[in-house]
Image (cartoon, rainbow, N blue to C red; front, top):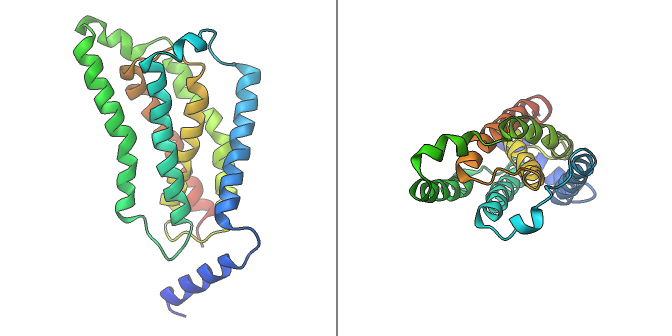
Length: 212
């Protein structure tokens, strides 16, 4: 059987199995997010001044950026779970959080004295960001990889990496409610590093468990 014929057969077979793959992936992400949220609330909880912080642009920007990562990563992950398609130019959607952060950083550099830049970058919670975002990403990432095994991605490592980005988007959104460092300089430094670690883990998991 030719490769293209096999791909079409796998695609047709996936469509005949019970609940849709999209439904399974969305349910998996929701369940994983609930586990992470429950652990987060039991261990940390939200920051004490969250009501006041929610009225500031810097605080709100963190969530806008994490959601700008989560949504395209999830959509791309769902797209690549089918063997007959590729990401193509849709990967450009992942530039949205990068552009958003770049604009925010530019504004921050223009409005904050240069002698405060390093302090803003380091913040007070850099280690928490580097450790907690990957930790809280594990339940949604594991759930996504398990659900994606019902598909037949042609690019398992890339699909896994996108699952990692989506899981990191969930985790970073949850963690941001506790993090008291709202500066775009902090967010642009530490959030991408922790997110990249989760994406790398997702790529490894995809190569290991999504290959067919």
